[in-house]
Length: 104
Image: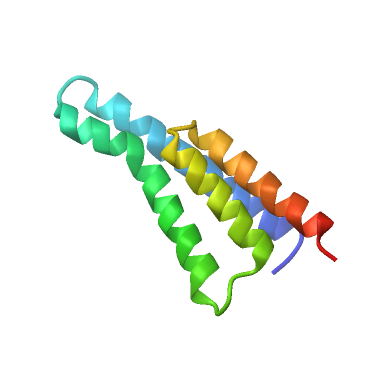
């Protein structure tokens, strides 16, 4: 499956995801309150899940590629420093790209 069908599928799924995320606060709107603990977990959960997926991908398929490993180490350091999520992803990706560019 290639071409316009793939683009339409990706856009459709993206729109559906956006609508579902927007519907939550609109439908609940003050009728449900969460505890402060649950809110704190919700803030760090995306970073933890992405970190687990990346670590599994990098470390599970035999010896890790040096460029990927460098990106994961840099991103992990930024997570430890509590850097914003977008910055962690961008700097980790840039590190991987630079190491691949410089490697023979």
